[in-house]
Image (cartoon, rainbow, N blue to C red; front, side, top):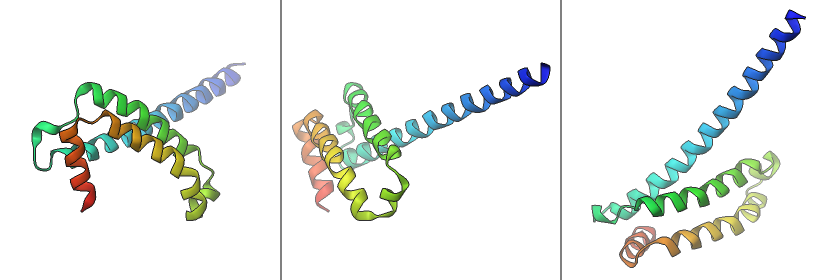
Amino acid sequence: MNLQKTILSLLFFIIASSVTFAQQDVDSQINDLIKKDNVMLTENDKSLKLTEEQTLKLKEAYKKLVLFENDLPRSKKKKKEAYREAMTPILSETMAYKRSLLTSKQLAAYNAYDAR
């Protein structure tokens, strides 16, 4: 009986740890995307950094994107065309949403960086 409890406790710990690790990985991917956005926006003008409100909204949008990408089957990730077909709609939706959140000055800076 003690062995069963020990095994169950260990199993629960492993599951809880893997869920925590997976969440941390998603959070780090989201934070990396936010950092990249801020680098693009603030290259010439530091005042164009994303506001807290913009950051929170983008984190939600990026979370959907990251989770969608992480859920794609490995077979699609290996085949570039299948991956592109699966990702294009959600990526386009996320980018359109991001552009709608930006001010006109931020959008100009983003487009200038993107044009290079």
